[in-house]
Image 1 (cartoon, rainbow, N blue to C red):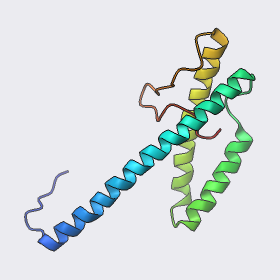
Image 2 (image 1 turned 60 degrees about the vertical axis):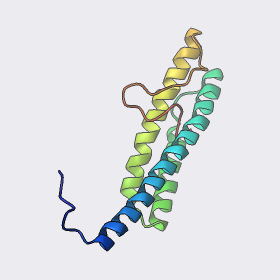
Image 3 (image 1 turned 90 degrees about the vertical axis):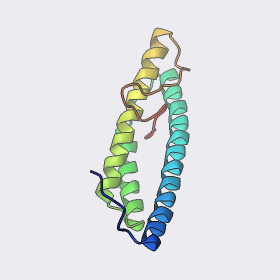
Image 4 (image 1 turned 30 degrees about the horizontal axis):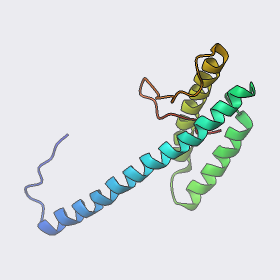
Length: 128
């Protein structure tokens, strides 16, 4: 949906631009933080695969959900939204861990960067 900005006051337009630049910077920071997180979780996936540990850790995931919901509440963010985001990330991490485990078992690597393929979130493992 597009709307015309023709009738917007210059001071309003300037404030919108300032706020949108801040949002763009925050979005960039979020992407970089997720990339760092996935680098760490990729290492966890390799360690799990090397020691034949399961890709998922439901007890840790449950603790992480509780922790993240508390953080969200203190930050005035909807805890349900925070939980949904974590669940999305954890699902992607588990998928990566399964891929790493399969590669390790088959001898095809395990060192590869899990690039996510079909719309995936990144190259590592979030819940780990």
